[in-house]
Image (cartoon, rainbow, N blue to C red):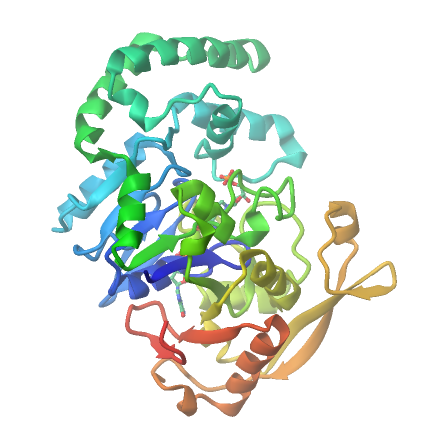
Length: 426
Ligand code: GDP
Ligand code: IMO
Ligand code: MG
């Protein structure tokens, strides 16, 4: 029952898409369990780049069944666009299925995401404006619409009428904007129903049967530990649980059935949107990381904030997720740096700590304590064997292992599917 979970260990964009694609080679099934099209997962095969937002990054492997699980929020318009894009590139899409329990991101969720951000002004979260927060909010206040509701369209229409009345009141009375038209939504979703119908499944049964029959199942996390609704830098977080626990909740799988929990760690840090970022660099080194690492959002195109590796953050991800393996990505981006500072603790109010305080006011006071590592100053992108790595690069990797008490199993030295150094077989 080999089941692998891939999660982000920082603030997202660690290269999870690439790693899921690499591990997807052996997978019978790839399952997304949380988030929605706020994700932007890049897969590069023979130099050709594909960015997936909602479809699992196993989509390019026709033999892996791809499932969008119950914990995901689905914008059906985006889903269908991605399917079309995949098919127009010559890929088959019949292996891509969606859970009947997943919630639908409705056009009014996107509108409300934008309106709330505008209203928050200087306190805005910096969301991707894809309707994620408002959709999860409706789920938890129990007025959401699920994919399975589309099956019996009369039921869908009734639920929509009831929810839309509330949403339109918010939109017109609180924000003084135009209401959404019920009949138009009904027409749009009638068409969507036709297009989604054959892909709607009871994914909990399908995924558990696959695990019980020893199939190789890969769970693909979106976002990352520091964006977790419970453990991230709240309120500057997303609205789901992008951790290994999120797999149990969002895919309907017991914790007993999770074998390996793989944390993807970028060799430095980036963050998109607002919120504290202790090792952020607003200098030429930050600009250099952004330029070499091409750090621009795969979903919104926003320049990503860049900084040095923060091991306190990675350690926390290791603990919360119970990471069994680390994958280090984008280490090649550090090739030309003579000195590479790595944050190993914070100083907060004169005290040294490695803990991340829940109070953002406290956390904002943290000053990074760096250990200065020597760079390797050579191009490592063509290296495929650990022994061939420069000594200083090995020392950098060893520091991460020592601090997080977690073994590094794979090192990624370039965006392509082939640019990897395997240390331990995953
Ligand atoms: P995700 O959201 O975690 O899947 O990551 P993104 O796709 O948003 O961002 C990662 C970016 O880094 C993408 O452009 C990848 O093609 C690229 N990438 C992934 N791994 C490596 C690597 O090892 N080296 C370099 N230079 N780029 C990488
Ligand atoms: P992947 O899967 C990086 C960030 C947004 C914002 C916050 C809340 O590609 O790593 P939301 O739209 O979710 O309500 O926004 O979370 N965010 C991400 N940052 N990578 C992502 O996904 C992200 N998904 C959301 O920028 O700060
Ligand atoms: Mg991304």
